[in-house]
Image (tube, rainbow, N blue to C red):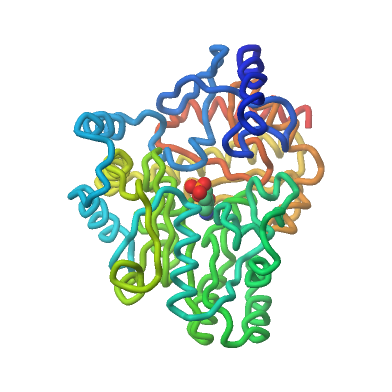
Length: 429
Ligand SMILES: *Cc1c(COP(=O)(O)O)cnc(C)c1O
């Protein structure tokens, strides 16, 4: 494939944008080479500035669960834009999407809209700290909760990829209030809670981790966390920015039957526009301004275009009783196909999968936490795999620490083409 135009555009971008990108994971730093500039997309496919076509497994890093330029979402945004793009006043649309979200997700009474997943988790933690009147939080190594200061302590995703888990600019004061635990290790959490009795406001985690590859919780892990939180009077926050409305209508809470105290959303809830949200029971949500003392606000929060896109997306997911089954079947098909060809080519690998999230790791050891994910990423195979797939027109995330997102727009023909490309590429691994 020829990437000439992308290369020229990247050179121009680097002059006026730091590193040429507005979010670091886009820069291909982890895999080498230069990023590809996308011109347009439809359904399962991306088209770049050089005219190349790709089957897309990034899907804007999760939001586009029904594929690119999904007609009901596009139409809703266009129609809405003609009536004004922002008012800074309440609109009926905000209540409509809130009612729908509350009806789809178990265990929440009220939801507050923000503009990104980062804002959602940042606000949720402030609310938890205010509500409990305690400073410390527990997070897990390799879990990514956006880029606010409290979370840039061994975060996953781009923060891992770039080897700066503790970013300069995060103060020691902030870092000391973030306690770090090992994913899937309950005993470790118990020790932290015992050592910091009466000081921990909340435990936050990705209930299915998706920013160190896909790592499902071990049996009993989420239930165990729920029990520990009850025992120590600590709030449990599920960061469902990736898993919300993706694994099921009610996200991981529904699948695992474990209730969180606060749930964070992003990605799918915005249908591809910038939206985040956090939700909880009345007692906790009413502790937010203007009813309560914890402050949180946003000029463009609940923006009409973003709400129109999100509403169209949620209505589609809510109205299609087969959607999550179809996504699961497609992902299982891809899993089986990749499994077969990697075995045939005698490549050591582990595949993790939950719902429409899947990741391929190049090592035989089970990938259950950040340490094991990092070990399997350390052998350089992923970079060859990534560039090989790209040259075959298959676009996966440019980092070994990311999940592939399956969308309903993918056909079985697309999945077969992907499996064939994996077969060709893995001969060389
Ligand atoms: C993407 C992501 C975030 C951050 O969301 P942004 O919209 O990028 O700020 C937070 N938590 C999880 C689990 C995510 O996957």
